[in-house]
Length: 150
Image (cartoon, rainbow, N blue to C red; front, side, top):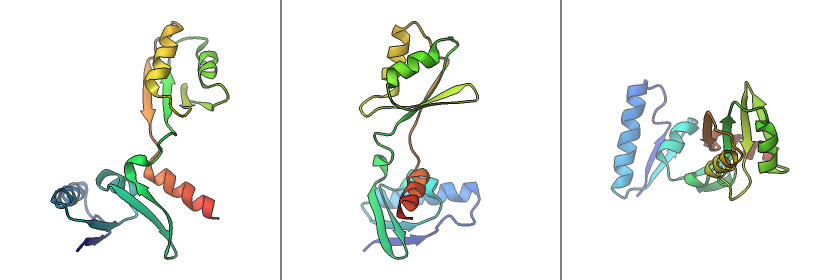
């Protein structure tokens, strides 16, 4: 029989939230199924293995949490090199690059990862000063699912 938790961290301070998160993990580690309803999607992403998006009682999407954003990796990159943008464009081809506050946001092609970009830039003589992989959050995917429904 599953344990159903409805907004278990609602109104709690950070310490209480961490305690609930640990309790949920322990119960799950014992092999128990937990159904957790929450609007705090960051918390859902931290403790759940699967998620489902319901709207007006209808299932809109479901799947493993670790599949969120798979194939949609974004890499933040910065380097002190005049030709960085040219090499980034060469790497992604027709892919998307944005620049915000001196940091490039590179939307990676399927099958490519930050280490591939770093190696490519290094081979061109560019040493990165900032290279961070960003995975799509559950919240962002949730908003995209709702936007597609309209």
